[in-house]
Length: 340
Image 1: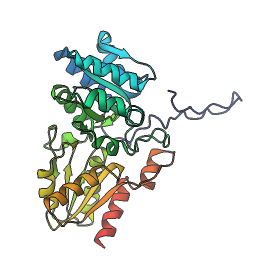
Image 2: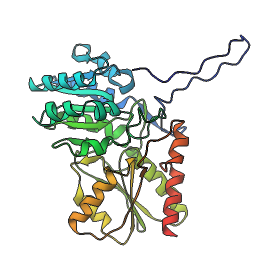
Image 3: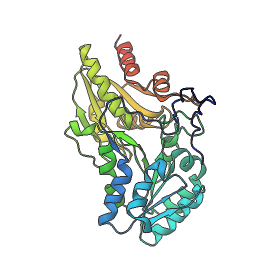
């Protein structure tokens, strides 16, 4: 696996060097925003201090999934499997059979598209405690369709017994890791890596596996969000308050199993309801909410804000988030349009 090529410098000695950038490892943090470095790697290393069963594996992507932090802290419990995702998860399954608790990292696209059968039959069918850690979920890289896992939740939602976690920030990740290690059965964590925003510490919030949380009340509009879109939902709610629109935000970090009780209680009101997700509107949070509402018999319109059902462009993340409707300004414009 190679990373995005950096820009070169001019041949002339007097030329100003070009900035070296990488669409592969781009950050979605806003300038000046509070962040925490490599929260997954540090949380896994900390959890391993008290749980000797925890091991870490990666498919040649330790640095780019923050697994290198665990490797440095527990080198004897780290396994580099090379560019072989099926081997990665097959080995993790074997380790889990012996009583270990593997966390196996790669990019989400490789886990979902290349190794599905191994995950399904080697891990999910026997109900093993293997934790799949997928980097670059949704539109968190500008590297194009080969690396943008815009449909990973849709692929994994149908896998029986698989827990799916879509964390908002460093707080969610820090709390989710030990809970996933302690939970029976397999999981899929949509990893936010590098310098990850810290958002939820400003709210009376604690991550609980399988539970949604109301972060903010509001009389006019309700946002049901997951992943980094909870950060954007909170930002958009602040901006909409300037327009005298009162917005509630419900954070759903666990997509499966889904906390229908909490979410539907917020949906079943006269307020205009939206789902916000860093995922295609096909098969993700929107359809999870819509399915739950239909099963309950709620005749409620829910407006999806998410990625379109298409392969996305490559480019800079701020540009792409504007283009595909994930930016704060795009959310605000959509709400104002819906309210007329």
